[in-house]
Amino acid sequence: MKKTALLIFLLSIALATSVNAQNKPAAILEPYTYKTKLKGGYRILFIANDSLQYLYLKKGNKSIAEISSTSIGLPYMNLGHVGADFTNYFVLVHSFGPGNSQDIELIEKTTGKNLLKLGASWIGADEEKELLLYSDKGVPSKKDRMVLYNVLTKQKQFFAFPNDIFDDPEVLSRIELEKITEKQLIIKYDINKGYKTKVYAR
Image (cartoon, rainbow, N blue to C red; front, side, top):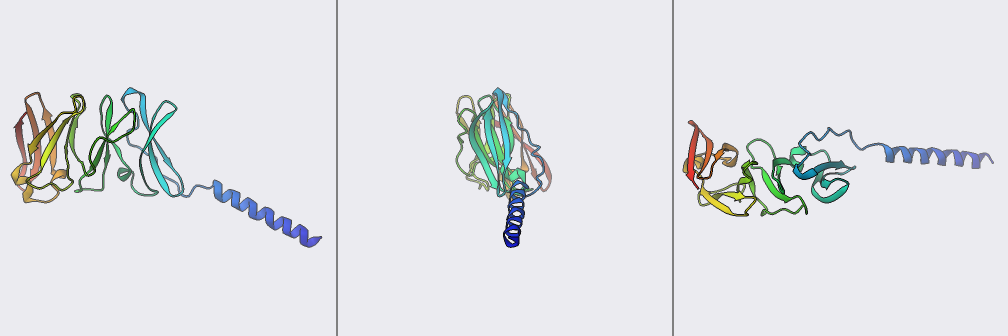
């Protein structure tokens, strides 16, 4: 009788321990502080479990797609954040630290699908004009071109990188989009001697 009572007691302790272990979070996570509200009533939802962290695209109560996932504990900038929010699309940027190129996806809000090829990298955007400036490669060469993509018309324009920007590494991290007009694309870029501006005809 005593053995039976002891066995029941030990089983109840084991069960309680198991339940507590399941309810206890694997780690205390920092809040996801990047922009989550998008135009058109869309939003990004951050979710994490014991091993992975995710970003989901939602509208109202409808979950449209899982748009990113990484191992738990990796920086949220690796997971992704909104770089530009257009009417029907948005740019999800994946950052991997200073000096590195920033991988991007141009995601359609209604489907969660990415329109860009793997390896596309951020340069800049004009949300009002719905224009995205990017590179097809994270480490471009002199023969590569910057791509100006019109999100509304799906048309592309191509522009050569400044020759002197290749004198130093980390090309894309040293280019900034200054201004886009109907007739011009203007960029600013960093070289050893300071910043330079280059104007392209469109």
